[in-house]
Image (cartoon, rainbow, N blue to C red):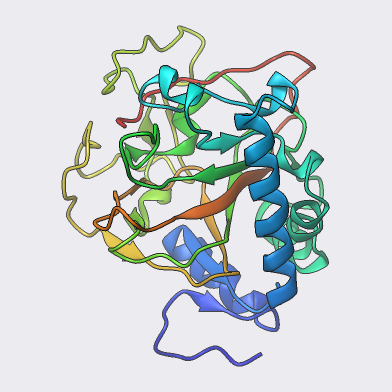
Length: 282
């Protein structure tokens, strides 16, 4: 599949070498053309059904979530998240284990990399719609590594399978290209006042280079940041050490739904060993 050259960072399944090059340099890249229209339609249908099951209390509590929300009580009215969605949706499981995706993850993380599908929160369906009932509309600056700085699971690559395309109207990803090459401190200072355990590594990144400036605690504009937009069916990959945030929608009648998860290149933790530091602003 030929990808228009005016879309930097977007690659087809026939150019994994180019995608790997761009990812290694910038910390993120988009794969387009792997999922068909029917693939994405099935993902949407199965995820919406699972979301309704969570809201109705028809699914085990394992699949509901409040840990990521700005107010846990909002989960009583609406489900922004369905955890372990690949256990409920065959279409999601097929997408995230697609041979092209697995080949790319091997390129980025090595042949021993593993998908976190049944640990911690697993693969998560996220509905980041605006509105008063929603408990997740945006997220402040962070790197994924900072959520578990005591674990040896790193490095990792997060994936986002876009059910909806993104824009200023429904929200979008903000990234600082190349920031994965900095050694970012653990979130000892964070927007939520969460204590970082003494077992945390002091910093993490693809190199030992110190960041040129401190990561903001909220949603401030950062020097060098760019907006990353996606089309329906795109799979966006970003490095665990990349500085990123998500902008809130400007149109209250829009949707921004996607599947989030990750492949890891470090040591798989023993059963029951988990860590989640909610350091990012909501």
